[in-house]
Image (cartoon, rainbow, N blue to C red; front, side, top):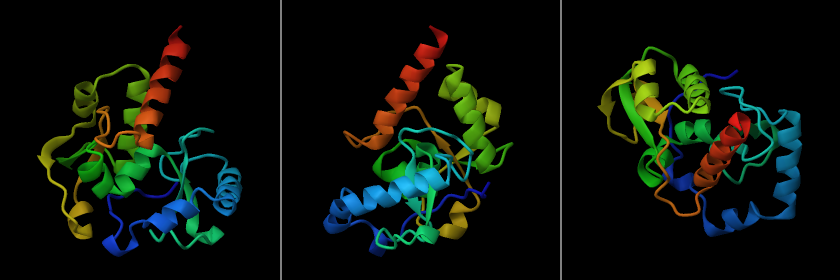
Amino acid sequence: MKFLVLSFAPLQKWRNPLQTLNLKGEAWQKMRLVILNRDKYTCVFCCFYSQKYQIVDHLDGDPENNDEKNLQVICQMCNLIKHSGMGCVITGVVDLYKISKYSQNDIMKITREMRAKASRDEEIITNLGLKDKAYFKMDRNYLKSVFGFVTSRKSKEHGDMYNHWLEYQKKQHIEKIS
């Protein structure tokens, strides 16, 4: 398991329309499947396994570097932490805190476990000992000193994959308890 820290993709590495189009192409879809199978559909940060909505992430943040050694599987929640600028600012589903009783990796695992038991965000935050809300800054040193919490709020981005994943997770929970 890799250590998860909050970060962001540098502006010059953000996806442009051509890169986004390439990710819909056959070559990328084949490569994506190779990586999902290689990593057994399991997130490298929190060990969450799912055959649906897992992300093939670029280690170096460069969406044009599709070398197998540069690719890894991460879950939706860890992706929002790894790319906390997206999670905090663009989608608005990640809150930052200065204090936690747990590591970022443990925050992810415990959050997922408690959500599966229908715990509300407030209960999870209390259990994690998250205190002193912080603001997002595009500063890697600053981000190393804070903890991210992926809320159950819907993303500001209509049609965002996180929203689809969140609905899928809720449906899975309902099916388990039925």
